[in-house]
Length: 414
Length: 191
Image (cartoon, rainbow over all chains, first blue to last red; front, side, top):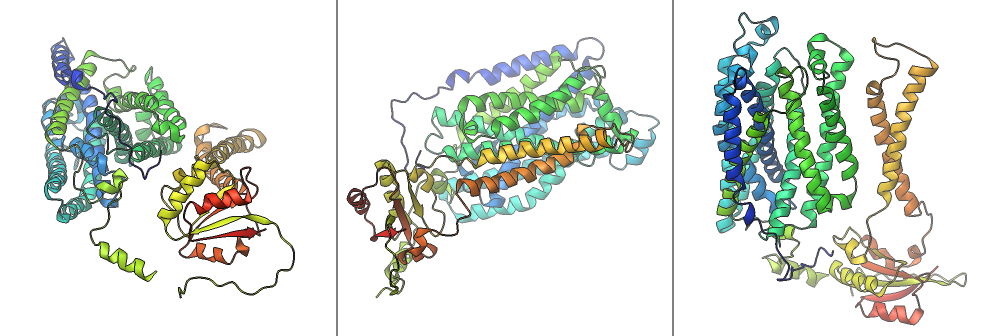
């Protein structure tokens, strides 16, 4: 596996054929829409179940968009070389935000079903104290602002990157760095606000100062492994065949391990501080999540979200093994979804977790819409940044510097 | 005259010595990389590449496998975690039972921060000591330090040394193999 020699795959090597999956997004959308509609109109509480299921699935997919945006921002802020081949994937993931804004409409319409405090009259003491942030008007304004910021940021980052494909000028890189520099602050604040306003205020009495970073850790965790399989699929099916190498997969796997630990660290800290202080207005949140099968979901997060991936991913060969990583990706999706359920659903299902038709419907519907748009993005644009200054470096190809005279002058003096 | 070429000081040899290995000097990282590939393919086992800075891709060129230091780190970490948990259990839940803040006498929750710190501490001890052990360090003397030529390793030269203890070593064969890789200079280093 010599990194400095470029191995060209023989023409006879069979490539992964993805065309038979091309109808999948449409099928998912139809199945999901039917399931959601069925659940919504089914008797009493159908609308409430619909709203909660939809929000759970929505927060799951929002994680992928935020994770994509974060990886793009990090790429520019660190001036990374290794992540150039996967950057278009993360740019596309981030630019799903305008679609996410449209998909947010059902949540905005059903907000009264989800958030008790919107209809609470008179407000309880906690709501009274938090009214400056937790009120209906602010909730809607924040949603509009968040989608405006996310859409603008991800649009600029992707547009400049696509512009560089045409002429390779350095000004585009400078532009992307400019947007990343303010973008990382906007990202931190906006993600925290989203996690607080859309998930945490379901039980507005609760306090946790690390809720934003908790959602962040899980989001980037699931995104890394998702980007891994997308890169793998694009490599095996052709477009990234000569571009994505061992390095990209190794580093994605390594970051996945890092975020496995980071998520556990954050979630443990949140739990531990609340457990140790033992103040009722904080502990009630976790007490609710020990009832019935929510206890098992908590154990799944402890062992499935942390311990199993942690021990599996320690080895370098595991990070490069296709079967292990594909199983790990599906496992991470399940764990992250259950993490979202652990945050959103106990208020609706106090006796324990149960899967509902609307859960499956919402996952299929949002997943179908997003994958359809994502595939369209992939097909209508170059699959990796064609003329990024670091693309040759990332591919492991040595290109002689344009000012070769400087090098030869130095050699003459040696 | 090239100012960087070292000159041998006139020091009288005190004792009769036996050869440690053959030292080949190269001027560029590319040269030493290609030479390393040839030495690797020739099947030598007791040899090494010396350079002033890390050369990317050298591990592959030398055919080096992933380092075993990770195992020392892992078992160091396991030992640290176990130490933390059992220490707190022994102190708080067994030897001197003490109720703190209305919490149970022992809970893995409050033992966790300490266990976690000890995991990191012992894992880093494992990494450091494992690295020293695998590198056979500390070592106060190395035969190569006797070679005046070898000074360039801290400046701008690259070296391959094949040791005489290599099973495939033979004075003439090995010298010929090294010569075929196009070194700038070749010499026998004495032990």
